[in-house]
Length: 366
Image (cartoon, rainbow, N blue to C red; front, side):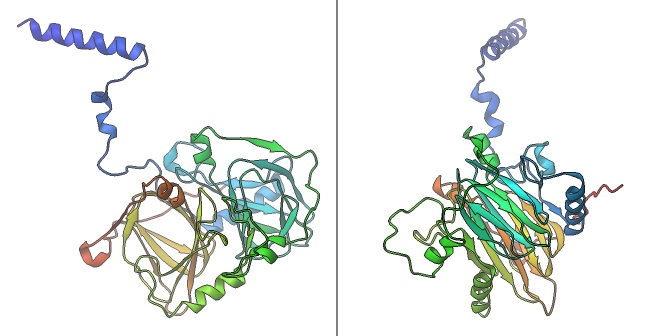
């Protein structure tokens, strides 16, 4: 009868010694080998009415100094981590007339999706790329970049970066340029003149960088492509969904980040599916709802939504007469490169989820 207590004592002493020497048994960790992904991040939405009020207040309260005036969107499920999803951070940035955001560079890759304002610019390695609403602008890893606004109106855009991923890889480098701005070394929008021709690439450009050499994907071309396909069936899960592509390789724009734009036609409802990899959606136009793991997110123009990995999701355009358009950043290139991208379709209930709740954010106002 004394053997069992003695055996328990031996086990306890063994575990204490093992832990004291920074070792753990697999039998203690087996619960972390889950049958499917169980992300800590949660689905969340930032309403444009809230974003606009806080970004407007930031313009009065915070000057543009060494760093940008950009509101980082922290996921409530990640315990204060600098992340919107496990691998991506989204932010909303404002630049007032006459302001310049100082030049710097970093290993995280960045995109800008222009929300408001015409004529401001991002300068990438000495090339100015001018902005208009709906434009997508790239900042490849370790490229010098600054922002300037020589217009008479504010400009607002959504930033998307792979900062959480780069932090987890311990590959963060950051450096200020020696002057506020990098001198102009190429004419404005040179990359668009060289690489912005569908299916045609300059033969004398031999370099094929991992990030797209085309820095500007203009909204007029994007809308033209969406409109040309509106009568096609499209994806049952995403509607008329297009991925922005590297013009030389046909691959994703960036090694760690894909960018999508999707058109939901009036009254269109997609079916539910889920996949490894997370996403952040920005509502370019229209109104509708996205159901994520049974929770309905009712959205309109300007809202930003975080989608966790392996979360069932489906979209609906609730207007009977107006198109809805969603832009998104996704970390699928990382999952695909590692052979970890998986997708699953909901087959029950006609491919649609039962709605169990509606998202109601806690918006703290003074």
